[in-house]
Image 1 (cartoon, one colour):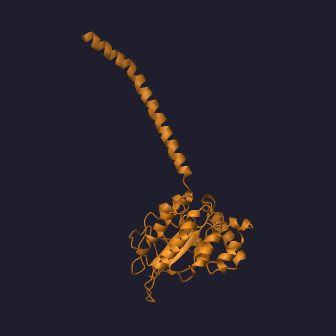
Image 2: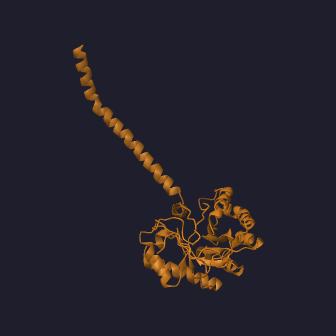
Image 3: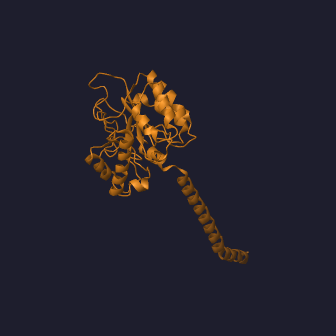
Length: 298
């Protein structure tokens, strides 16, 4: 009996290294497959959507003094004076803003705004100027009483934020485009990804300094319903993302998108506007008198 146990033990000692090696190979394969799947998923996510959803993971509430309800001094929202503080108007001030256009969707968005007699602020990019069918939309935005601001020319993060020089080159390009197309010397800017983005390797304060040195100001948002997640994002979620959060604010800066793959935004917009009008909201456009909203103050 003892000899049998000894022989069994010897056999186990002989095959144990092979078993352990096999287990190591299996674990390695599983790890490699898992990492590859994670990378695939990350690559499939829109960088723009990722940045925006990360930045606005917390909705900041505006207090009666106009300061942010959040106490995180490293990631704050600044509003200047509280809405209605001077006029006594207690209605919520709504700033509808659209990023990433003009596109084939912008015309219909303008139609909806005009039909409801409300206005918005469009932070535009430059590629539409290279398309004869879309180029007139820059001027139409302005002619119909909407505000226009800069959202970079290329909207390519790796180019815009590569250096201060690259940022200035892109800034000059989009500013000149807007002026040439509309005659508006806009002072409004929205950083691609927002002022609190984690994409730029350089401090965002460097770029904010460039804007301020030129007399420009940057504006972020406090309501984002997720419409940049993808073309199939449901319009019901966009509607609820706006109307379900609007009561938290006295000054509501709503981020929407009018890029060509945002059909759901177009579909959701009539109900959003009608819902806000039913709440007696005051529609405003961003201008030099608008309280500044900034996720991070530089």
